[in-house]
Image (cartoon, rainbow, N blue to C red; front, side):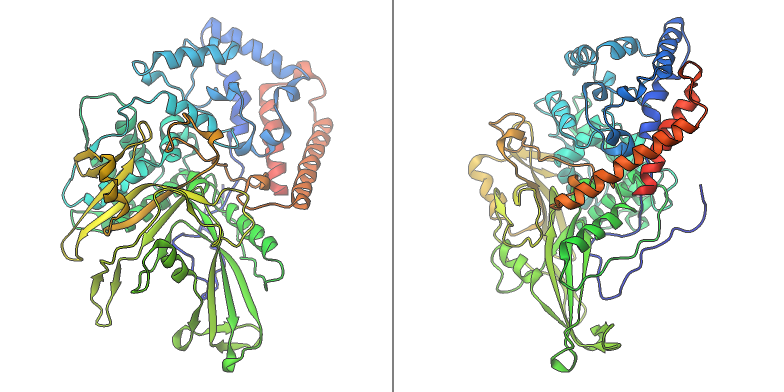
Length: 584
């Protein structure tokens, strides 16, 4: 692999990247290469050797192509179809020394049933779910069905002014799809150890250990000590070293960014130029921008938390302007909504966030048509919303004298069914209604403050207050504390879909919106409303990829299936993945 500095995206100064770094890329994952060959190439005992011989017979058979469920599952390995065999897949966590290996090969359903019955006593036997699915639905159902009724209801020890960290962890802990991923998914197979922007996986692993202690590990202790996590986040972001007070939102931002870098399914980052439009083809420009972003970024964080904004700049030279517009589409990981004297509800704050602003003086914009810096207007619009929407109420601001102050104004917000249809301008296929499931609260002022968290537990659909090591369930009449919370600082919303996705229909919080693994080869799984023409073009490309593959195969020395080696088999799968990636 090439060494050297990572290439950066071209950025135009007037387009602000909203709370999300644009600095990553994507490459062919190793999943497909590992899938069939890795589980077939390990030897050892007589039983294992018999398995290997049987596997080689399969590999030598011309029916290999039939064992691959679809072209897509190989050409785009991070978005293949999900099957029973994938549920307990023979991945890096599976070894031939496993006494259940033979049973797994013959009947995965039986093994899954036996493993499930052994829980919670046999939790250490749980195998991670494979990463070949195009969504995480089966993962969600599997994890949820094997959790205890008291899972997730634990405090976090304050290590010394770490309430800002504990409150953020509690809210992320109750982000159901993220917790499912770290409990039941083979996330270590996705660690990007070569990413200089990450920690080599140490931050992701440290976070997973905290989540496992809170949700999975059986213990009588009701308090988790996040000491190793504190060391890991401090190494990634040195400003969190020591025991000073910090902003919980800042910790949250660095944590999500660090986990993304650790788990980015991208090993090399190409130069990507942001597409620019003039308002005549916004849908096409938005798709191109999202595809360019996926070229550098693909991870569970992108799948869950990242949406897209439309930024429009209009020339106002001499008060009239030349009519030139510059439209770009920018990713975001959370929205920071301003508060003013006139804002009473979260919708008012959203209106204020999306209102047009004037750019003049030092903020003037360079108009490519006028060839000079001019006065301009800037307008942001929500274009595509993520499955998990994080909203920061901007309670801290600086006065004209440069002093930081807190805005104590109460802001009303919806606990359920917050509808954002009127704010979204893109043709998004997914629901635009959201339920609140957690909040970070800040009490006090800018000099002496304290953070707590409210969160709704997935197992009983009850709200809890988490105050470092202490926690308590809120009665129904105490829910007003959540709804009328003038200390709410960061709000966590989960997209609401129809009842068909309910694990148990009586539980609202257990409804799981479908999370799609974002990939280059399947734009129909993007949050955008991809047109039939775009999908047809993508399908045509995949078919052409397969034709190229079969042409290479026919010209190779693999004409005799009886002499075909496992090494050739691996090369064959790897080549098909490479062809698809080059086409993408």
